[in-house]
Image (cartoon, rainbow, N blue to C red; front, side, top):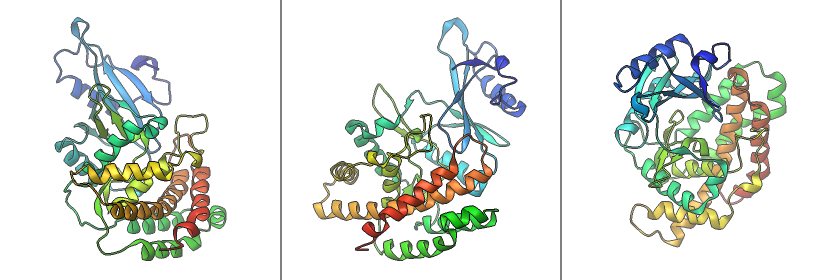
Length: 345
């Protein structure tokens, strides 16, 4: 739905004055924009942490509209990540041709270059051609040399998020989700999964379909939104991507997960073969199988992480999403698969 800014003043998604001012600064740099104040606002669905809008301005002589993306940060979500660190990552990644440019910042958000590509849908993740391109792009992303200590940061993140959960007034939820026992689960997973020589790369850590775009003309893939990005085991990032295939955030029940859509073993193996070979060397069968096993184990870490995220989000985020039910499903999946994946740690 495209709505003129003047028509959305009384809507819940109307833009704050500081955002309008920042947009006017951006638009004033373009000589072909007829009126920097005559913008159109298109709210985009599917974001679970921020409010996201596409902004359009008409141009002279009937030319294509100028477009940008506005991202307004969700209230209270700074508990999940360091915004300044995320902006530094955003700028670094964009300079290396991996994402949109940063055009302007305001107090609680930013304006980004609009990429003329479409955001993937849930079913796109299962398309063999698109999936192959995602695998190659993930490998490229993981090879970025970003400043910071190359280690598995996910364990610190789990402990921090668990502590955040316990600081909230969650007596009933803590009992139902077994938060008191999760500390021991984190210790168990870290001990079972960590090993010398583990592949560590710069990971996105939230590679759901809404954070992947494809150019329909040249079929190139762009990974966007780096709020959770950090160094981590690449198996964790891939595991998280596979888990996201169970989700569709554009249904009437976006919080419901369908694990029948989790990729089968041959689909996973194909993805990993493409991932490992995209750097130019053909991987051996043993290398593929080892990574396949690691990825399966790291799905457990993904379930714990996003389960904790859901509990915190329910208490700090105003986006219309059943975060608590989402958390329940992730913890339940953890319990269902733990014995299988840790049988031979």
